[in-house]
Picture 1 (cartoon, protein in one colour):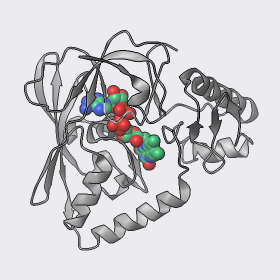
Picture 2 (cartoon, helix red, strand yellow; picture 1 turned 45 degrees about the vertical axis):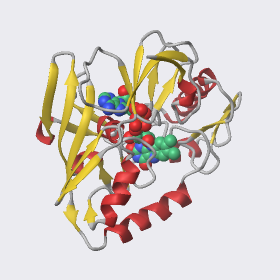
Picture 3 (cartoon, helix red, strand yellow; picture 1 turned 120 degrees about the vertical axis):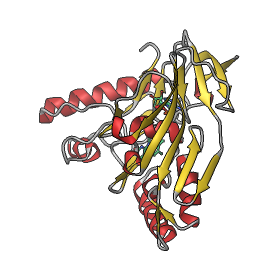
Picture 4 (tube, rainbow, N blue to C red; picture 1 turned 30 degrees about the vertical axis):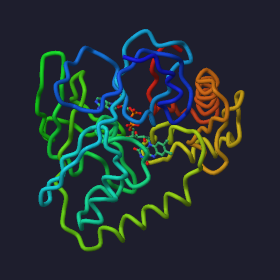
Length: 267
Ligand SMILES: Cc1cc2nc3c(=O)[nH]c(=O)nc-3n(C[C@H](O)[C@H](O)[C@H](O)COP(=O)(O)OP(=O)(O)OC[C@H]3O[C@@H](n4cnc5c(N)ncnc54)[C@H](O)[C@@H]3O)c2cc1C
């Protein structure tokens, strides 16, 4: 166990100190209720030191057997998408450029460009406080940026059934260039809010005129209004900005925005 600063393990580059284990192998683990983090690309960690144990998944192995791909939870979902596409396998293209891990993608039902994580998922192996279990795709329910039906525990690995496709790399390159055009760079958690019906939260925020709005050194991106970019070191500022966006959007449109990002610790 180490003392780590969560700002070193989250893409927003904010967050206080905690006791953490860096998990490099999913073998012989005993789950104890710790908070699990993949790449920290969807979690806003409090500036207040976290009074609990965090496991940071940095396990990084995967195997390809015909169309079946089994990846440990710490594998980069984007790298998995790119590698499997280069082997002529389709089904994970949506993940190209998403900076999270396989475990985080399963929990969030991450997705883009019409595809999402549960589309090609076959099963996951999890460890809970009661022991190990195998959950098939049918036991899970996909919803927008959340997988329902997951028990409290750590995802050890996920198996996907992909499809042979000679155009897999072409498709991934296409999504990659779309993402490069649409996505701002900088310290961010990606989309802050969920879609509202079929309406993009970014469009709603832009229509209300909130592009460029800032609190401290965090601001609403001019390129994509659903992205908050942080140039400081304060989760509290990011959280205040989120609250102001929600209030202003509600006041002007009656729409209640709901966070896609997850909060960890005390706010
Ligand atoms: C620049 C940028 C672009 C993005 N674009 C997209 C996009 O297009 N589409 C999209 O859906 N998301 C996008 N995201 C958000 C994010 O990358 C995804 O949600 C990703 O799947 C999160 O993975 P992670 O490993 O970072 O998870 P984390 O942020 O570390 O964790 C997310 C959740 O998963 C849980 N978790 C993580 N790993 C495990 C595990 N092994 N076992 C149990 N629980 C676990 C955590 O407790 C937490 O609840 C983007 C983020 C950024 C910064």
